Length: 264
Image (cartoon, rainbow, N blue to C red; front, top):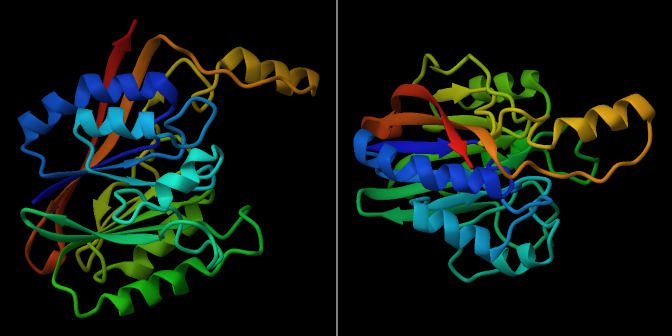
């Protein structure tokens, strides 16, 4: 089985890039299941039904979240669907809307998808990410799973590297998200877990993490508030990783797929 994970989709321009790139990529590479990092899909951050529908039409099967999951009120409603295809970080407090993990049922078998926030910079109210994942794995130990995919949404590369080793051999893949910059460390760890510190963003190259560069430079130079805005046209990098799943839910290969496309 081949599972594709798409890094943070940024605003409308990122969604348009996915719509251009993903259908052909799925056909060419015979991809069976697609997961996308969704917390920035709506312009201004957050998640909307419109954005979810667009990406489903393009071929995305499942969505993970992060610290911006609830930036738009609509995110609460989406997370509370009875059978969601979207999850938020599992180490949010217990009364947070939605779910932090879900078993996705596919024609090939069941896939457990887990979403957690990194511990540093995200506040003291979070549950411990490693212990949270341990608990989820324990809850699902009797499930027959084709694969287990963990989206670790964090700031520090040290945390992202460490959690890969911590989960090596216990999950199929640990993919880092949030920093919007692709790292060059994709590999299969010694006990069969695919890992990358950050997949990167699917967003405009001529920007600062997806936001118009002029706005960020002005804020930095003048130390004054300036409302964020996102490019609507330009070259977008579609950032993703493709994981080949073998027997016993182990990864046999991880490939970083970076594709540039023009949005006009």
